[in-house]
Image (cartoon, rainbow, N blue to C red; front, top):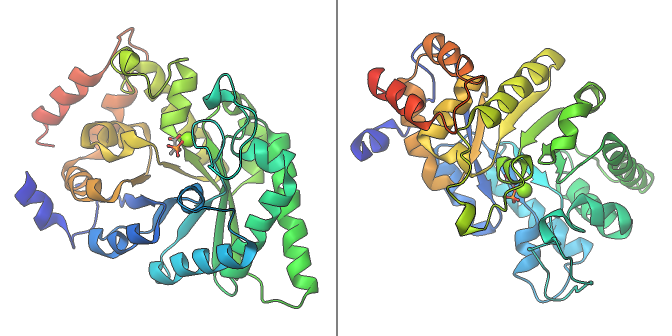
Length: 325
Ligand code: PEP
Ligand code: MG
């Protein structure tokens, strides 16, 4: 299998029946970027902007952030990079920015919630992103969105910053794509309003499934209690893919599951066409993609989502063995 993986580098991730699957990497530091070229990935599907904030001693100012994001875009050499705005708070604390402790950090004052309550922080970041992407493509997404009103409020801040830069006579990004992370289940019931407002949707399966199952993603006692390969989880993804496709919104999955070949196979079977993962997972996932046939995989996976099973893992493994995946 590892020889297969090595051989797959340089070969496109196309299924046996000819569908191109986009494989991207998750990144957060400059040192992650050389992996983009090395892994042959299509772009950065998730750039976690909080990572450079976490390794610093103080809050980076606009000029520092602009340099940082500009470097990331330079290193991507024209490949798309999705910048996720700050996802701090909760368990990702900044040592130099302490606020009252949250009792339930994962469900606490974090991510876009902080950005909307402290708009100066989010506006500075958006300003830096706009400047860094001057004349280039800018893709921005907001994390931990729970309602459409938050998307509108964040979008207003982005528009204010664009207008500010325009008035200053600065060269704006050549294009702008706006996305939202789907991590909070409440968004699943707001898709009709949400989808027309955005260009892309990124499923953060780590958070989405911890909230879907009310099961702490970091608690080892719960690690085996619920499976991401359960009918509920795959049913949610299948439904999302249908809605996003009908609305013409691209959808990716960027949680940990996207980087495991069996999970990635299940996601493709649900209709996912873009996966973003830790760089070292790309070769094995590419090998898997090249060995599946969507004509049989999709009906198989989508036929499982109503089963009353705890997990579909053994069924999916059986399929993979039977079909030479
Ligand atoms: C996720 O929740 O799946 C995700 C990709 O975001 P993070 O792991 O950074 O919370
Ligand atoms: Mg998350």
